[in-house]
Image 1 (cartoon, one colour):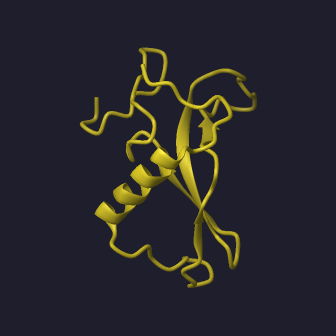
Image 2: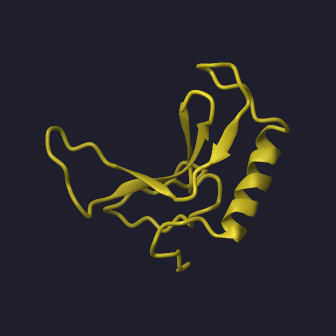
Length: 104
């Protein structure tokens, strides 16, 4: 099991790994779909989105981890799955999301 920082802040190693992963997907990060600028900034911390459970919030339940980018010009935010991008290991259990790239 990989140990991640408790504060959720991306380490230099994670930032570099994410940068290389992004470059492997797109040589140049595209224009913001809102303002058409190219002023993207990597958010310092991992972001998580909890699973939707109707009208209630389940604290401590499963969630999806993301790496965030935001446009400095307009604030538009893009979320990239942190498991798919290799920043967070895929350690899902039967009761948690498993984001294996092979669909399983």
